[in-house]
Length: 129
Image (cartoon, rainbow, N blue to C red; front, side, top):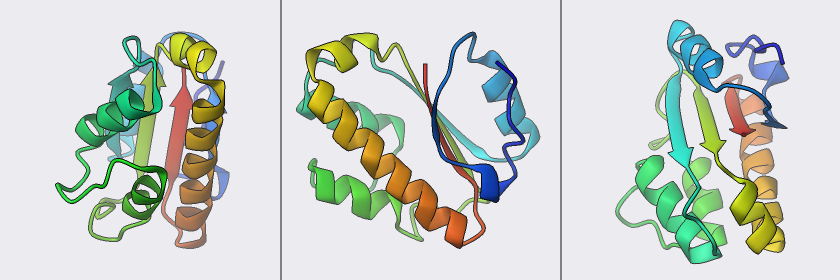
């Protein structure tokens, strides 16, 4: 799979990714975008996902560990102070299998955040590998 032009906010969104994640990481660094790579191999539940995202995305201490708090933080100007974001969630298969509804909810929140930042001309990419 070819790495998209990550600095193009109009193309940003949430995508499945097949193959190594190193090209995504390199492209994010080259584009001077904030990169967060989060390993979900041990995540089996909503609570574990929210904790992994809290730590991996370096969300604010006031993060409430619920879906609304995740949405609020992802669309917060203070948290998203950089030129753009690339979030790579890898080893997602177990979580997708064990908690498909929670995976879908998280996916929708990421998609909403990407649309929000697209309107603000800031690239916000999420890849599930």
